[in-house]
Every structure is written in structure tokens, then in C-alpha cells.
Amino acid sequence: MKISNTEFGGGYRLITLENEQGMQLAVSDLGARIVRLSVPAAGKQRELILGFDSAEEYLVKDPYIGASIGRTAGRIENGIFDLNGQTIQVDVDKTTHHSLHGGQPGFESKKWTYTIIEGHNEASVLFSLISPEGEHGYPGTLDIEVRYTLTADNRWRITTRGISDRDTLFNPTNHVYFNLSGDCTEAVDQHQLWLNSSYFAELRQDTIPTGKKLPVAGTAFDFTKKKALAELFISNFDQKQLADGMDHPFFLDQADLNVPAAILTSPDEKVELTVKTDASSVVLFTANFGDNTPEMHGQKMANHGGITFETQTAPGAEQFPEFGSIQLTAYQPFTTITEFKIEGKEE
Image (cartoon, rainbow, N blue to C red; front, side):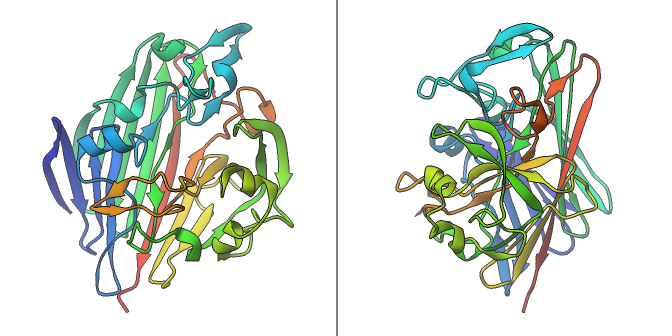
């Protein structure tokens, strides 16, 4: 394993891991985020995710891209939830009046401490952060660790751990956007997607879950057989129209690290991404930004220029127990693992 540690601007660092197959994983202590993920494919090094060239760009253009998200990824209606018989009010977004990703600034904008762990078959960067009692209204002092591991066989593994000194909520995720074409100016519509999910969470117009689990069968959200994302984008399915794509939690048929949750294939079929997770759901967001897209590496990102696999408990779980539980009991550690397997073809 090759490891480098360089300046990333603004006092932040960029740590790059590279295995013998040429797969590179670059991460930063700004937001414990992934900045680059690339593999050799079709005769050259191909970038597989969206990102920026400096820490300052993330802070100015979009601090969520590639970042660790928390305490609670997604939205909480009106920032209100019940915990142990008490009504808790957390910070809300000034525009939507709902809590978003645990409040701002959240995990995504903080400087994390880190340790580099070197090995022969894998190398890791272990990020850690303390969220103090009462931050954005959440009870408990929360210790968080996010460990990014690159393996010799082209796997990127995220292990997230949290422990609190009081009962609280905790529903972390990573907000990486994939575009396997290597070109942010190309929409992901020609990517092929398979998803191990038979049900999704219906959303209201303001993207808050209604509490209903709807079957994907017969809808544009049915990816139980692999198909191009273009079939989604051209549909008039009402939930697709609501978001101009997907911004929805999908309930996984199997939450098992031994079973694929999703498979994404590049338009030229030179790169395949397999997602595995122990989380019960995954939020798919198809970068529905319209014309309001940022510039990346000197080029303007396309609308629908990426897709996320935000593995977590479905947003809305604080209201709807059938979605799962995001309550973190005092002094009982929570750990979740998501793994991305990359296969790049030279020919």
C-alpha cells in the first residue's frame, strides 16, 4: 500500500491510499469525507465520484458532497421527536423549517482528528470527532469514529461507530456521489442499476416521508431487474416528478454484508460498483439540481450528474417505528458497515 499525506487548503489534509492494483482512495479531515476514488479502466485512471480540488471549494460550493453526515442523516419534520417520553426540539433549516442532516454546521463541516493505520493487505484512515451535549439540541455527548479502509482487492469499506453518555438519536451515513463514466458533465442516465429493494418510502411534496412503504413493482422505482436510469428520468411517475428523479429511502430486502444491496454499471460497462451494507435502507439521490450545479475540476456538473447510496436507517424512523430505530442507548455502542467493491476492466 502506498500512502501520502498532503495539504488540502485551509489547514485541512488530504490522505491518499493506493493499492497494488492502482485503485486510489483520497480522504480528508474536513468532514471525514471521501474526495477521490479511482481505478484503472479502459486504459487510463478513471475517477468514479464527484468532488472538488480543495477544502475551500467544499465549504463554499457544497459541504455535503462526499462527507460523513450526522448526527441524523436526512430530515426530521419540524425538528421535533419524542425520546423517553420527552419532546425534543432540535435545530431546523431556516428555509424548510425541518431539521436537515442533524443541523448546521454538522459533521460535514468539522475538522476531524485522524490516525493512519498501515497494513500489507489493507490500509485505513480512522477519523474521530466528539459532538458535545446539546449540540443543535441533541442530548448526550457523542463520540464518533469513521474508518475508511482500502483493501488489496479493490474494496472501500466504511465503518462508523458511535457511543453516547445519554440516550439520543444517531443515524449516520456517507454522502458520496458516484458517476462511473469519469465525467461530471455527463448525467448518469445511461448507468445501469440493480437494487435489492421491493419497497420505498413515499414522500410528501416537501420530501418528508408520509410513513407509507410502497411497493416498487409496476413503478419507475423498480430496479429489481437491472435497467438504465434513463427509464426513471423519462417517466411520469408521481414520486419521480416530485423530486425530478429519486431522493427516496429504499428498504433493502436483505440487510446483510454478504448480499449485494445495489450494483451500478458504467455506460461503457468498464466499471462495476457493488454495494453491500448491514443498514436496513439506502437513500438514493440522483443529484436533482437542475441548472443549479457546481463547477468541478473546471467543468460544470450536469443535472443528474451523480447518484448516492446513503446507507442508513430510513429517514422518518423517529416518527414511524416500522422504518426501524435510530435511538442510541446510553453507553451502548452502535456500529454500521458499508462496503463498495470496484471492478475496473482495462479492455
